[in-house]
Length: 172
Image (tube, rainbow, N blue to C red):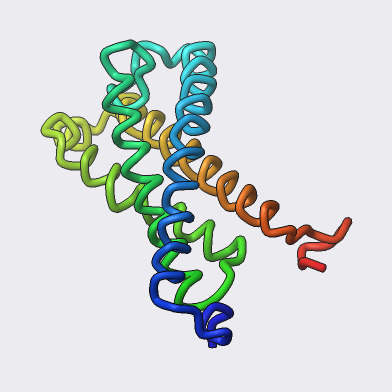
């Protein structure tokens, strides 16, 4: 039985909870994700892979709005999923939030990259170096989204006053 259903709040209260979770993720996750992508892209360039950078992680002005829209869509979907989960099953733990943060990008980003025509030409060519054109930026997007989603979840948990005991992985 969920924590919210045990006290039997009104349906409007449950919808407000889902809305608050979604808005929290929408407001916090895209800026965190954009900052992490900029840092990771700079590291990517510093490692010498800058000539293989793909459009998904570009920090050029022409890519900013597309990346923010994609980050907002993923954050909104993650917040909505987390809010519905908490409404139905009670508080979300770190493992479930981590799973949500891995599934959401796979629904939005991976199909978008996989169906680009050059992707199949790169796979068919057998050129392992050319695969980094897709795998490097994909790793940057996934890592930044997982980190921003987990940060948003932690902000929500800290707001509730739930803290971890020092040296343990279970809450007090």
